Every structure is written in structure tokens, then in C-alpha cells.
Image (cartoon, rainbow, N blue to C red):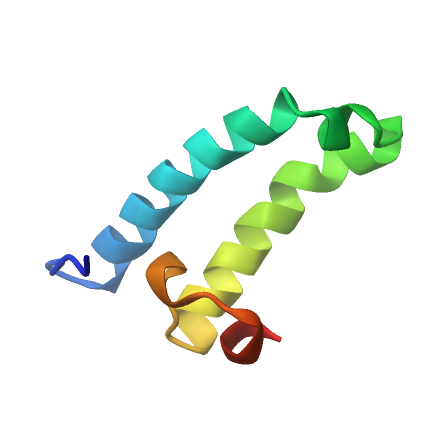
Length: 71
């Protein structure tokens, strides 16, 4: 379901809020636990940069993410 936002900043903030929950789930996963200390320290920045790039630069929201849209 696509949601209408007042502006791009509101849209990006809403997506970051949703992704924050995903990251919380990821932190408690076996996949996260298998990362080394450096990878764990960079995980948040990597996720935030991915969200920013996909939303700002290619205009794709999480509902539209797929291999062909973000690869």
C-alpha cells in the first residue's frame, strides 16, 4: 500500500522509521550474530545509506524493492 506524504523528507523519514524496526529484528537474528565486530558497527550506516540511495536517487520505496529495481 503506497502512502501519500507532504514532501520527500516526510516520506524518507517514514521509511527510516519502518526500517528501524527491521534493523531491530536483524540485530536479534543469527545472521547478525555471525558478523564480526566491525561489520556490526557498520551495519546501521549501510542500511541507512541503502534506504537513502534507493528512495532519493532512484525513487524506489520499500514496497517496490526487488532485484531489478535496486541492483
